Image 1 (spheres, one colour):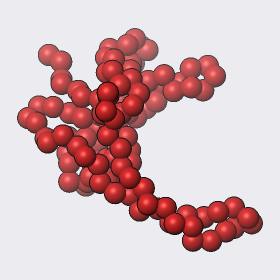
Image 2 (image 1 turned 45 degrees about the horizontal axis):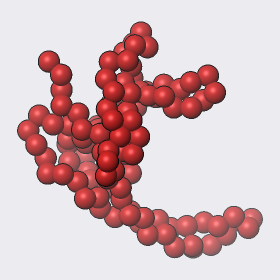
Image 3 (image 1 turned 30 degrees about the vertical axis):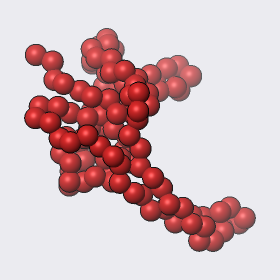
Image 4 (image 1 turned 180 degrees about the vertical axis):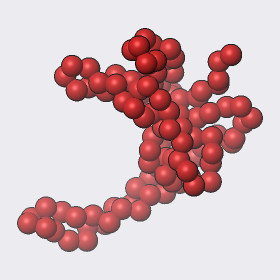
Length: 110
């Protein structure tokens, strides 16, 4: 039985098993979900700008029974009330360090 996963990120999410075989490919979202960030420079440290950042809310689909949504960490953090949001974790990288997928999905405890 396959669990319904809906990818709301702008990138394909490839999930590998423990033997590095692809088990799921979730295509990138046509309209990715993002959070707005309000940034305000609050100072400088050695000439490097330091910003205060306030994250807004994302326009998410309504929860649906049995459906899990793959989102960015920023989206998950902006919505602690949602238990149906998952983020890629245990990342898999190519030999040059590029992220090519993950081995697990994580859920925010909140």
